Length: 547
Image 1 (cartoon, rainbow, N blue to C red):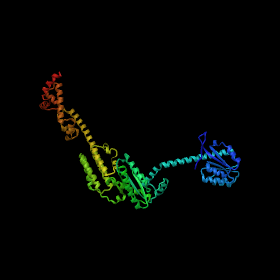
Image 2 (cartoon, rainbow, N blue to C red):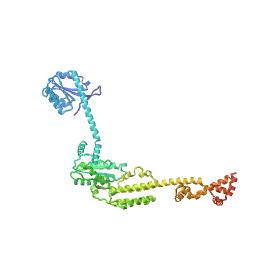
Image 3 (tube, rainbow, N blue to C red):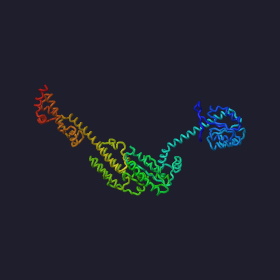
Image 4 (cartoon, rainbow, N blue to C red):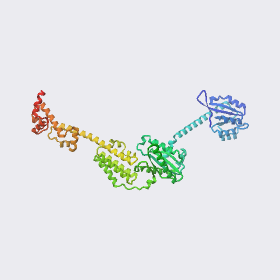
């Protein structure tokens, strides 16, 4: 429908067009000249002499309102009303007649005439009717605008709504009737009758952080646009899902495999990246497409064992039998932890590689491998805790240790991650040990300086106070001070003895007792060894300078 819209020069109201059709000149002229059309929101576009002229004018101008007499030559008002209802259903029709007959009223209602007025009509009646029709036209216009806006919003939201629907479909959340109804509403054509799902995922662990994922999606969508048997969308885990259909199961299975090979090659050529593709079970109805999705997801999960750049079918996975987890796997995990506790970085890395190789060569399911790997992580975190390190101190596992594992796409990724994890954990341990050693050394110095005058002070006594072993204390203390315990204690006692010899008149044996010696002769020998002179000679040499 083409709307004849005009706007008033004196106000912002929308102007509607009005057409009069009447074979009586007095009526035509009277209505035309009596009404101030603009004040009522209308523009008079014509006054026709009969129904035949009215038909032509309606075709040309398509007015918003037509007021027509019922009894006219050539074409009467009811015929005009029927024509308008059929061709221009949004146009309002007002019938004028000089006959108050019920049959006319019934026919007018059937033809959806807007109103039925009796001649002679007064100017006030017509003005009232114009205001009423104007209100109806405004309401109709607002409804059309609201509908247009909703349709525009629907068109803009259609891709997102389709993706949400398809994700509910592969989750198995919809009944058959819902699938049919929503497919029609979203303008989705999924003819079938057999369906299959392909699940595509980049082999790069960090592909979400750069443009690789977008490039892969663009290539997949470019290939898919050339086909009429596939639909592409993203899963809730940001993996590309391809819904395919074909006339029968063999065709949809073979088509899925050929399509997967084409896609993998196209992506590799265009982006330099590789993808792995899981292909689900064929199903005969959309209601069971969730079964195909679960099969594709399980198939894609086998990449963990098979490695990257794989095309794996659910039938292939379903046909392989799983063996019990061998004792060798438990022993290999124990070796990793043992080497880590022993402090051997190279030994730990070797043990990790041996364990991953065991997973790679043993016929275990993806689930069994993943459970074993989770146990390894749990054992490693437990070993760290026992060594005084919380996992939050290690960057690789600081926030979500087990969540990080789910990001790994292959056994190679897991092997590399565990090797980096043990190196990072060992660096944290070394740093913590250095800090602990420095703190213990400072504590030892403080204790020695506070108790140096006690004759019974010894390495054994000091280690007992610090709750550490002599074998741990000796290298730690020497690394911190550059001296052994005996050297540090002797130097400290000699320094204090020198101060006493200079500042007091104490006898040699008194000085010896004051600095922790029970034998004055041994003190004198130790002093001479340290300074090259006896205590008396030292006092005599420095006191004149002191004076």
